[in-house]
Length: 178
Image: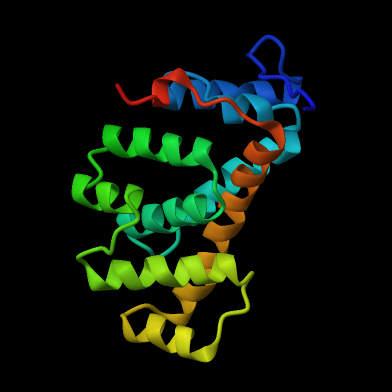
């Protein structure tokens, strides 16, 4: 397997150092995924900026996390599932929702369940969703704006999922559940 460098503040390209420092200050450590992405300052910046944009969408924090975790699972990104689980637990994300997501069970909240299924369909069908699926999404209380904003979340997660698949990013020890 081709090897990718897990950069530190000392080894990263100059243009990536400030972004890695921000990651370290925010998480308390530099996640391996960011350390791998640092090889390309453009990629690392795109990932971070896309994340900021997704956080500005009209989805609630729980909905945004549902979207991202669903994409991680559909794409089989074990690194991102572990990372999101870790940060969800730190942020007091509702444990019953996290548990249902990790066990891939039906959610009690029907609106969130619709969001989960719609997101899954978008990924599995590569965007070729049908009008009945859109109608179900809208009937659940979502808007055309949110349908389009969902694409920002998809783009954000595809960046991280694909980097982790290609680089074989090792899961940070911080993410391991005791």
